[in-house]
Image: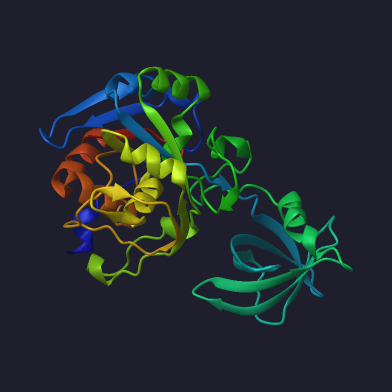
Length: 340
């Protein structure tokens, strides 16, 4: 399919540049696949839009404090590193901006004893860096990196002064992601409690969100795009909750990818841990998920393609055009849609 089929009239004015005062004050568009109906709600209305027997599935991964300010030695040039994935102890795949880096460049970090050496790259913008601490303290290295790092906001957010906790979900757990599972940002503890009172179950899984999620499809045909690879884990408790549910509601595209990547046989989901490069495009047969909550995504993105595969391309285009007319806020700090 042609990539331009997943485009829409985009302008930067659509981007929510900061979070609302209260997480669940965001708007919620209800999109009904069977009828093509679209209606407008507040996110606080979600409990009334769910059904007894539903199971909401959250990605409870937490965003790593992965933005590090470094100094290039011996020139003193400023470099900003973004940790993407730990390849082995002390060895990370990173993105960088500021002063250029290449293999053999040494880095230091103001206020810390950590040092680093660029061992590979950059290739397609990514480099490999080996971090070290003095003496025998390498076991504390990751904790020190996270101590000196800051939670990175998406590249389209202009205000770096936003409290990093607003880019974390209230149910976040392990620091393994480079970006937030943003559909979960709308939830509060009180809202989750209200959802449980409606006899809707809640389950957690993990998927380490990578920054490649922001990369648009540049190829003319979506099939020619190479999807990013992400680590995920669907545990026993999550599998049991899903197998006993009447309808599985994925909270976000990351939960969707993890659930559809897990082992599924004879109508039963099994606990699964591994890496997924599942690329969900129109024509994909969904095995687990029957409804989803998602934010409004970039045009020509794999996320736009995934939602279109689930809801139908024409209905998604209709929903996005409606969202633009109605002044919905887009992307990470924006509004959401419930697709049933």
